[in-house]
Image (cartoon, rainbow, N blue to C red; front, side, top):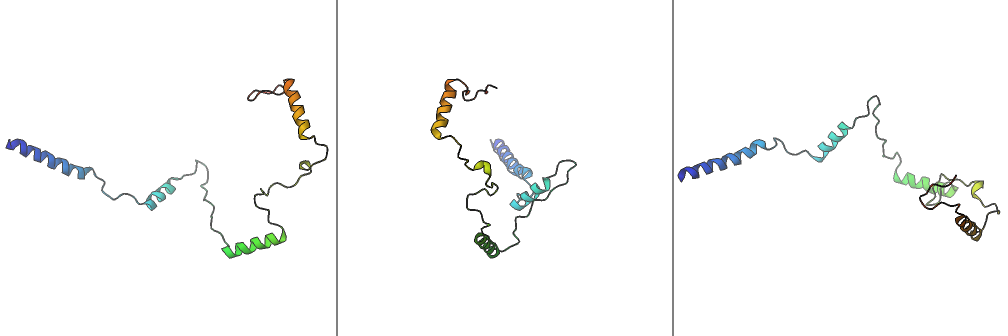
Length: 127
């Protein structure tokens, strides 16, 4: 009985001390170390020059940007909120006075549907 108890104690001691052998030798990496490692691994494709990310830092202070915005607004250079800015008024976009009314377009569409000139949703149009 004493031998079984002694063997159990030895086995338990071996199990406890063997865990330390498999543990990591150093502390886990910090967030900064992980980020630095990820940036170091970012490699450009073969034959291409690596590109640096553009700087997001502004060369003007907040007050300078505000003054510029006020000046642009006063001179009319500032686009209204929500405008894409890339679209300029085009003659094709303006009304010429020869357009059809909504009721006329609806009637035309209905007649085309009856004549089976408009394909069903998801079908290829007849050409």
